[in-house]
Structure formats: structure tokens, C-alpha cells
Length: 194
Image (spheres, rainbow, N blue to C red):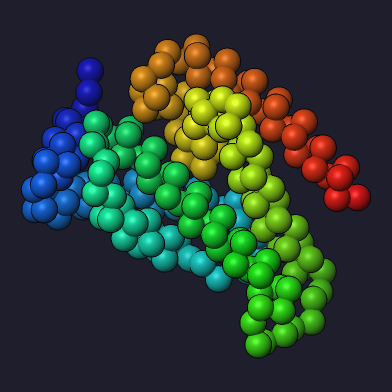
């Protein structure tokens, strides 16, 4: 049975989808803490010294969420699935821009120490994972979404199943197969880059 809070969130999402701008104002206080948790989850995986902060990630995701005019919100899980996807895009865009800056795209040049080498490797790993997920999506969209929701969204197997409207067993199977595929894909890129 759905919790009262989950029902409220779903109601506000549906009202927002139907054009009720006031519903968004009522929704945000209910989901803000969960968005911060999701952002902290992402930021823990980021490299040391990253200049993007949790609050900035939440705010950027919020700005992108309110621009989502065509989304027909279904429920809380759907909302957090889209939020996770947006946060992934923000972090990947940030990592790509950092790689651009490292290649001389900015006026400021700094010496690269061991810490920056590690930071670069983590940013490159995020970009490589994003590229691999895009390749997986071309083969099997649902498996790619499972990884996105679990890895980037921090959703449980049950929440992922709810968001994708499939069984938990299907999510478990997709998760296992997608992780195996991604490991091989990323290992192949490592060999190609060597």
C-alpha cells in the first residue's frame, strides 16, 4: 500500500502535468530532501576536488525539471527516475566540460599533480560509462534504464521495477546482464586506449 506522502507526491505531479503551476510549489518541499539525498549519492561518486556541489546539482536538476513540459508524470518513482536521469546528464556534461578545459579550453592553466590525475581519471570514467550506457540503450533500452535508475538514481530493485512497470525479477535479471555487458564494454575501451 502506498504511503500517504507518496500519494500526495503523485497527486501534485499529476496536477502539475495538467498545468497547475501551484502544484509545483506544493511538491518541492515534499521531494527536496529526497532530491538532496539523490544528489549526495551522485556527489559521493565524484572525484575529489570537484567544484560542483550537492546544492548546485539539486538546483540545476530542479531548473531542468521545471522545463519538462511534455512529461506526463505518473508517480513518485517516475519523478525520481527522471530526476536521476537529469542529474546524470548534468554530471556527464560537467565531466565533459572539465575534459575540454583540461585540453586548453580555458585561459587558466595549472600544474597537474597526482590528485588531478586521479580526478581526470574519474571524470573520464564517468564519460566512458555514459558512452557505454548510450551504446547499451541502442541495443536494449530497458537494461540501460535499469542501470541508470540503480546506479545514478540510487533506486532499489523494487523502485526501479515500479518506475519501469516491470517485475522485480525482470529488473534483477536486467541489472545482472547489463552490468556484465558494461564490464566487457568498458574493459574493451581500456584495451583500445592502451
